[in-house]
Image (cartoon, rainbow over all chains, first blue to last red; front, side, top):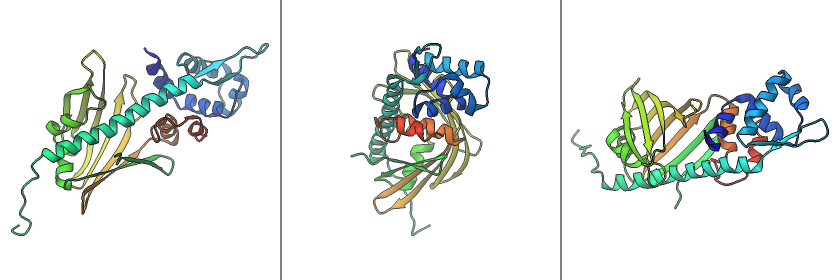
Amino acid sequence: MDKLDRAFFALSDPTRRAILARLALGEATVLQLVEPFEMTQPAISRHLKVLERAGLISRRVDGTRRPCRLNEDGVAAIERWTAMMRDALERNYERLDEVLTRMNPPKRKRKGA
Amino acid sequence: MSKLTLKTEGDRFVVATRAFAAPPEAVYRAHTDPKIVQKWMLGPEGWTMPVCICEAKPGGKIRYEWSNGKGGGFYLTGEFLELEPHSRIVHVERMFLPQQTPDNHVETTFAATPEGTLMTMRMTLPDAATRAAMLATGMEHGMEAGYVRLEGML
């Protein structure tokens, strides 16, 4: 699985998206994340592992704590991908413009109908 | 000229609009005839759609498979729910990247204008978090920083 696949997989879970939203407000430890989510610490840790492998968060060592934070590079990669998708959408419609120009509009006789 | 607009509505909707210099009949046909869909719904340059199933009737199947000719590819499946020629299409779709994305419920309308057609695509995501994830990633404004939108998820 490449990095982008991992990132989208990581984003496919509502708890992990909520964790990212929390981390967007600033660094947090596992214990700080356990509280609002009403989940066990191992469950949160598993989600964090998925996010870390996806490159969406990073963790640093601070004594016995390992606070998590958003990883800007990981988030930027997803942004680039979706910007590409948006461009692709616009490209689609430019292509459709060309197709429509070439299409013979269906012949209708409004007045005679 | 970028005529595509994308905006959010409420907490579960994304609305896209695009104007076309062709009558609604033609734009509707371009969305429901697989032979025509295959010509334009291709994404970035260099990609093709080798499989295009588009059964434009209520309950009809949708399956689009894209390929970059170098082994890369992804696909989308869906179903048509309602069709009102030549003004409205309601369908549901999900992507496989290969991870399955949540169902996206889409209502597309084609309104006649003096210039041709105004298409409005109203996408309904299953919940606010899914939409937030979609927008957090910058779909709305391209490269704009995602952090602000990630914040909006809570």
